[in-house]
Length: 308
Image (tube, rainbow, N blue to C red; front, side, top):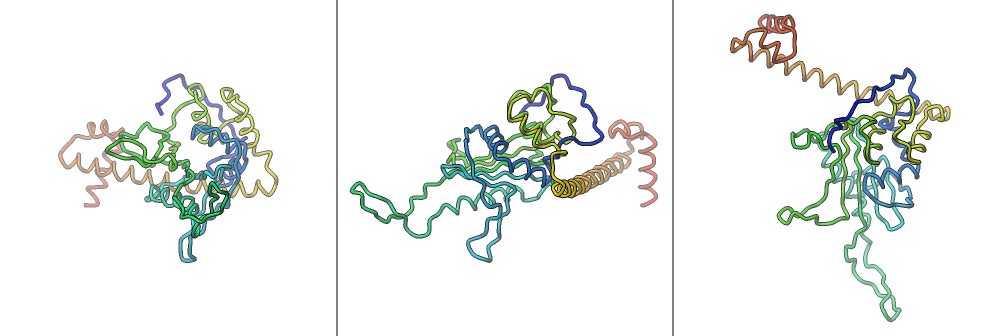
C-alpha cells in the first residue's frame, strides 16, 4: 500500500476523546462484537461478500487436557462453515509468525470428523466412508500496532496477504488458508488520501481515539455505524470502568515500548559517537551525522573518556 503524497489535512486536537481507542482490548472486542461492523470489516479486508456470521467461543481447547489452548480476540463462522479469526496485537512478539500458524491450526484440525462419515448413495442407502479431507476455509486477520516486517522490501507494505504457495510453480496451493497482517505504524495516509474501504478501516483503527468527529470522507453507512457505536459517551457505567482499565493497560504497553526504543536509540548513538571519535572524526562532523548538537557530542565523548 503506497504512501499518500497528497496534501496533509491539519488535524484538530481534542482534550477529551470522543471515540474509543479500538486498539485497546475492550475497544477492539466491543467494536468487533457488533455483527454489522465485523461483517463490514471482513468484507473490506478479505474482499468478500459475507452476509451473516455466527460468533464462536474465543477459547479453543486442545484435543487432550495437556494440549495448550488458543484464545482468540474474535472468532466467527459463516453459513458455509468458513472460519474467521481477528486479532489485535499492541506489542511486538518474537514468534508472532509461529503464533499465526498455531492459532490457525485449531480451526483446521477441528474439521476432522471422529471415525467414518455417513453418506447417502444414489440408491438412497446410508453408507459409511472415510473422510476425504475436504476443508472449509480458515482466515486470520492480524492488526498490529507495531512493525512485524521491518526489512527494506516491506517498508511501505501496510497490509500483507500470507498464503501457502508452490514456490517453483509460483502458484497458491490452496485458497482455504490465508492470513492478513495490517501494520498500523506503516499507514501514513491522511483523510484527504483515503480512497478505498480498506484505507478507511485502517485509518479508523489507527486514529479513531484522536478524532473529534467522524471524518467527512468516511460517509458510507458502515462508517456512520462504526463512529456512532464507538462513542465513549454511549458506554454504560460498568463498561466505562472496563474501558478505562483497558486504556491504562494499553498506555502501559506503549510507554514501555517507547522507553525501550529510546534506550536502544541512545545506545546506538553512543556506540556511533564512540566509533567516530576512535577514528578522530571531528565533533562538528559527528554532530552532522547524528543530528546531535556539538555540545551533546562533546558531553558523550567526555563521559566515554571518564568511564574508560
